[in-house]
Length: 127
Image (cartoon, rainbow, N blue to C red; front, side, top):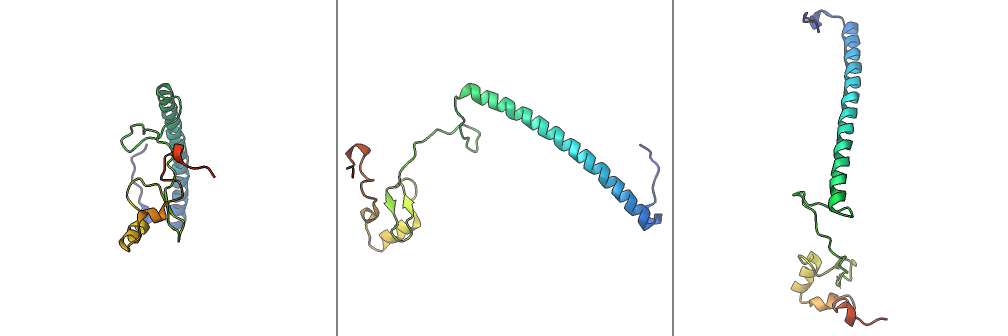
C-alpha cells in the first residue's frame, strides 16, 4: 500500500465520485467474502453443538437464558374461561387480570371453571 497523500479538496467532483464508486465496489467484495467466512465458521460451530447435544439427548431441547437445558413439562389444559372474551387460564402461575377483577367484584373462581376441568383425569365424567 502506498503512503502518498491524496488531496481530496483539489479533486474534481467526477474524480471524487469515481473514487467513491471504486471504494464501494472493493468494500462490497470484502464484506461479501467476510460474511461467507463468518457463515462458514458459524455452520461449523452449529454442527459441533448439534453433535454435542445429540450425544447428550435423543431429542432436541429448548434452553433457558443460562444455556441450561429446560425440563419438558406436559401440556396443561385450561381450567378457567372468561365468558366475555373466551380467554383461558390453566390455574398455574399468576391469576389473569380478568379473573382478579371478577373476584374483586364479588364473583367466585368456581363460576369460571370449565366443566370437569378441575377434577383429576380419572374422575372426569365422559360425555
